[in-house]
Length: 488
Ligand code: NAP
Ligand code: MG
Image 1 (cartoon, rainbow, N blue to C red):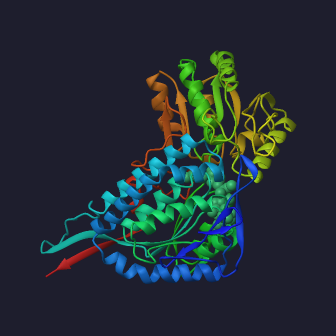
Image 2: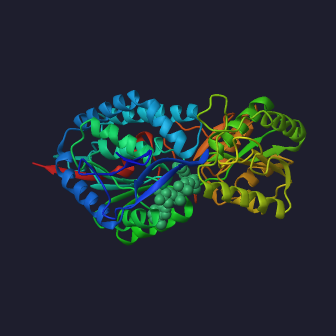
Image 3: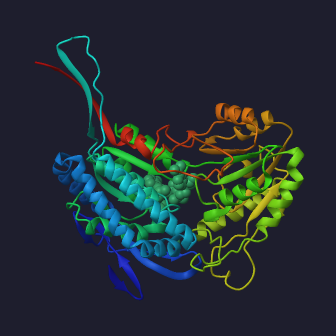
């Protein structure tokens, strides 16, 4: 870290050393609550920087994969303890870089620590099966080997949890890593890498190269020295990464967008449903891949639900996420802010009715930040852009239905299938929903945005490459199976 004016400059981390990019260029990381504040500068790297990182990871992999899993796990336990000591520092960087409230940032960092510990334990868990051979004198079993060098490309919305839920399993199963974080959150990632450095990981096992997606991200996707690619981000980028990986025979995993519905049945607990809609839809300013986006309400409870929702939304305090009383921070960047406003305009143009919000909040403290009011539309039909595309902002669309069948049919009428939730007290409706909904995460009487690190996570349809992350599912991606037949 070097001083550059008042804001520190963060370097790449390659072969155990903090390195400047060969380009000599840096990129500013901006605080979205105050667009004039530079949180830090990160390296704007080029392909020679990436090549060095991949070579370092390849060199380190030979010895790393030979260690016992428990020894690799011990390194993760150490990194967890260091991150725990630095929780406030890392969470502060997160809030300042991408705007989520400090409480949420601390919660995410705590989850990151739990992720490290969960995967540290994986170093001692079984990796294969013994399968009876038809030859009674033979032993047949499966074992697993690492992929080699893994490339990790991550978005800005969970700048601690997502890098960790990819890096931790990659490492414990014997891979080495090259990570490119989102440009918006390079500082937070550098602080995470610092924890790994202090934990004493051998040089080259973990490498970080910051830079633009079109250069370093694409470079990772196309690099012949990278054997596995794990990506979380938008569908548009994910598709190009999948194609590049497929073309050169690399393993890949894509976690992408959502357009997540909540269904409110006539027999729902309306207070619970409203709380979950607010929390699922608007926490992190609606910038979760699992955020509630479409609110599908039975006509019998539509009016009371709408009224409760509007009352509750009126109480939301928007502002700088570092302030104690703020519940919702800004959009993560100016680009994101402008995209969300463009979707709101599109909703109005296409004939939806704006119930509240719809713009940049007025008043002191908002002028320099990328804030948007919590926004609700009604009279929304399935063919409207705001009902089809991921907005990734504090925008909810209300849709009224006559029956549960119609509700599920509407819920499924999008190209995404990440998370879906229903509020009902009817067991038949719950079971029908579990069967019929196109979603990788099915949530009953709970908001769409809950994820537990020990359970598989991933989507159906265009939301993922049909792979799963987290929990024990991670072993499927980060290792290859060998079926072994032994005869003496
Ligand atoms: P994004 O634009 O797709 O960026 C994601 C990552 O890809 C960033 O590191 C980005 O680098 C990089 N990238 C950009 N262009 C690239 C290219 N041509 N080749 C390779 N890499 C490239 O997504 P985002 O705006 O950061 O994140 C929001 C999206 O992530 C949403 O769609 C959201 O639903 C999705 N998301 C999904 C999940 C999930 O688990 N399903 C979780 C969180 C977020 P730069 O930052 O330098 O552009
Ligand atoms: Mg920023």
